[in-house]
Amino acid sequence: MLALVGPSGAGKSTILRCIAGLKRPDAGRIALDDQVWFDAAARVDVAPDRRPIGMVFQEYALFPHMTVAKNVGFGGAERVPELLERLSIGHLAASSVNEISGGERQRVALARALARDPRVLLLDEPLSSLDAQTRNVVRSELGALLHELGLPAILVTHDFADAAALADEVAVLVEGEIRQQGTPFELTDAPADAFVASFTGATLFEGIVSDGELISASGTRFAANGHADGPVTAAVYPWDVMLADHGTPATVTAVTPHGGGARVQTDLLRADISSTDATRLEPGDRIVLAFAAEALRLYPRR
Amino acid sequence: MTALRSNAFTGLLALCAATALAFLALPLIALFTEAPLGDVPALLGEDVVRSALEVTLRTNLIANVLIVALGTPAAYFLASRRFPGRALVITLVELPLVLPPAVAGIGLLAAFGVGGLAGSQLQDAGIVLPFTEWAVVAAVTFVASPFYVRQGITAFESVDRSLIDAARTLGAGPARTFWRISLPLAAAGLLSGWVLAFARGVGEFGATIMFAGNVKGETQTLTLAIYESLDTGLDVALAIGIVLVVFSAALLLSYKLIAAWADSKLRLPLSSAPSRLMSR
Image 1: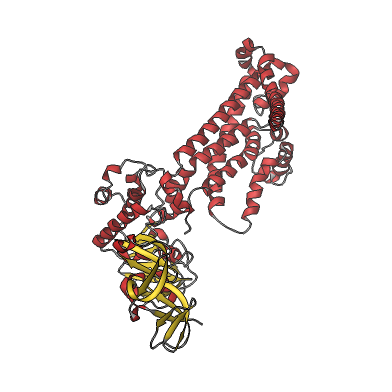
Image 2: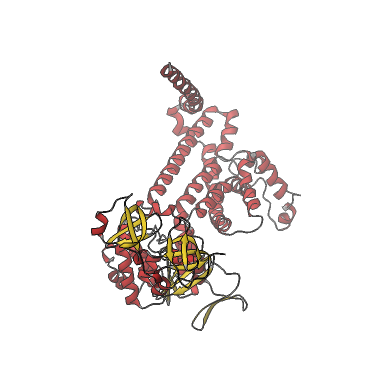
């Protein structure tokens, strides 16, 4: 399972569409094992209906004039009962796709994509059209199902949390180029650049390194041993930052629930703290934050 | 003061609306009041009406089969393919909509008449169109088909592109995608376009009288029969008028019903509505 993540307009969906054969790339080659689907040089371009893929579209693209069962059976009727059962939508078989919920629509789209026995599953923002509540449930269901299927899959999402939850491997795509590719942990452990750091959740701020010390634009100083002097972008993940007795003074600007605890936003950094600590904090409070030296990542600015 | 001015304005609007309405309704009402209503069944049984009705039905049936059989693929082609000059081709398709019918008639004569652009070739092949029943078919097809094709293009264009993409990734070739996805989803739009085309075809007059003439039992349609009856018997003309008013009203009503039905049937569920605002 590979996830392509990146901001809007990075070319994520375009890549999926090229793999599916819905868009023709200008150059390059697309192949699965020894099956070549596209090769600009050899003038090979297999029609989308001849490529063994299963695609789940951004808003699911369910056929509005067909029932759930007809939608699922469009690509192949044999596996319909099994797939309806497996995705727990058997009771909806005769329903119109216009009458079912967002989570159910997603499962219909998935069942429909699987009905053709695809060799690759392509998922284009499968969670983006769901509301926040449904999204969390559907995300874990989808994760379990994809794991169980053991089918190669490419997921496109603009949300790193979705990608990290669902994919073994994540590629960060910016302006059509892969900036970094690795497991979700590899990406947060060693983000290749400030963009990847920010995209994977880090707080960024700008500063200048001078004599082993980082001075932020607002004048806050941090130890930065071993870094070359010059202007830098600094990145710190909120989960590396904690409340402390000694460290960096900061002013709270917002406290929001996050995961099992809370995330506190200050004038410079963000920190993940326990909900017990969070109840004592209010915007305007002065607090002291600290993080380990290796949690500070610096990227030279040109 | 403001309330008074607002009332005066509403009054002015109502006066204009009432005048316009009266002007539109009066001729329709007059048809029913001036015609000897009791004699209408008998008048409709007259030979001239019966033969005009037959010619109208026969020619319109053929014309509409041609319009749907050729117009549907034409509309799909123009809606789904991009090529240089496409806008020009669409304008050409729409031109007969705004063309004066007399110009359509003289154009058809210039094209298919004896000595016309394609007329001599047709004559050599033993086909003479002008002043035959086929000329009526040609005139009706010429003036009515743009209504169908134009609406058809809109109907096919409004089918969500991702549904077509989805069908392709599910193993359907272009033809199966057309039959199973595009055509059913565009059906309501095509149907309403066809209703308009049918109404226009039945009402055809100018192009027909120029290209097909007004020969009873051969090219004389209901509208041409009205024209001829003005000299021989106004009552017959009024009776045919009543038939056509009822027919037109029925068509208009079915057009509106189709539009309302299509709107309710294919509207997207509310749950997916906000997501349409999200960028890709």
